[in-house]
Length: 322
Image (tube, rainbow, N blue to C red):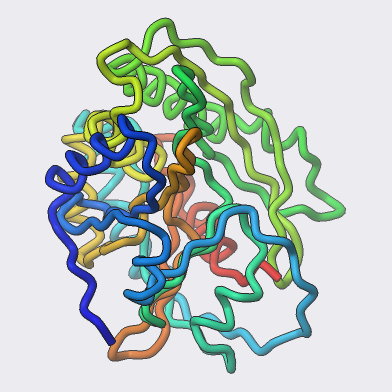
């Protein structure tokens, strides 16, 4: 196995700017903290064991064994209460709290990657895979668009799509993220407009479906950022939907509370085809560890959150998209 030559993202970003200006295609990935990143031609990525898939066709899959062993409610409650204390102090007004869940399945990480139905998929040397439904930013010409995804509800006979859109906590959480992303985009684009607000999409899981709430935010890139894809991401990362607001203080609270390394989970993957730029957030994430397979998931916490509902959402997001 050839070691992947990861570098800090601020170094990789310079190369991405050069390739963007020259119209040279590339793929890339960057971790949550920006400490580890890589970019290069897709054929080089494959030689390093990095496989990207964008909008891959859905392949029917046979039922598989899948067991999850989440942390106890009491352990989650302790983290939840720590976040609530930070919210009450005013350190943050929205925190994306995540945790690891050990899982068991007869499938390898590679087999999960191959079967997964998602618009953004990546496999790194059979070490981790992500099958994400969430777009980070797309850039076509001088237009940049982001699609923050916040708000989740299980599809059932008793739940309706409108229940998600009208839930007070979910609405507040979603509005906060939309405002944060608008502010982030304003660093590289003007004017900014919310073209579509709180629309609902269905996401497949191996046990049913979830409703997810998103919005579409678009801006016109400032001339100095056109085709400067690395410079744009340096301004925007980490993604607001997986941190919270305000970013800096919220990330400090996350670090103190989560007590584990996110690594590439909640980082970014993407592709420039020579004309258009597309990127996705690395959520729905499975990683190989010394303790077996770990699934990383989370959700947004506000002062209106209820611990049992947030714990249930954390577990709902541990699934295989078959």
